[in-house]
Length: 164
Image 1 (cartoon, one colour):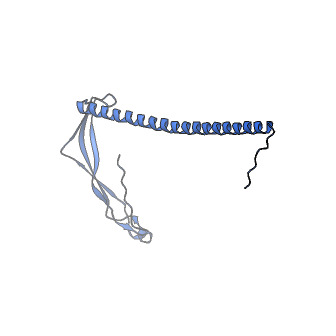
Image 2: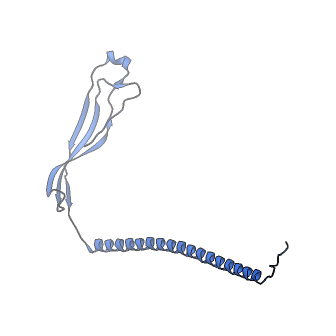
Image 3: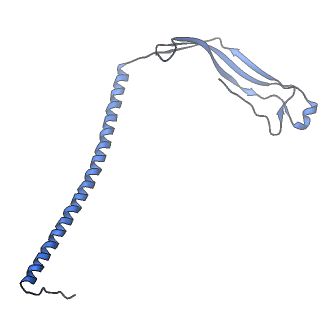
């Protein structure tokens, strides 16, 4: 389906003796297919525009009483040659090789994404475990200091105070 329109000049409408012209051509065509989702064969025409539209005369609203007539001329040309289209399944070694390369590339991309996710998760878990280990070490040192302080006071000794 072809839709074509022309626009008149500003504040004017198409009216008058000369016609607006449109130019189309019909090319006979034959279509064959071995692919199941298409019909086996069809015949018909391909419609195409072979030249730009030519606008006809146009006048302002004030000039309407002086002129009359609106006409459109559609030029249709049937081409002397035809169009032959054949669609078929073709499996070649090149297509199979290309598909395999694409599949291998896709698999490597998936492995890359998985490796990135695992690496980020490993880094986060390692950081959390390092913080827990540091916290446990800190608690252990504080408990030792507390035990030392309690033992020091138990023996009746005064814990030395440092002056700042």
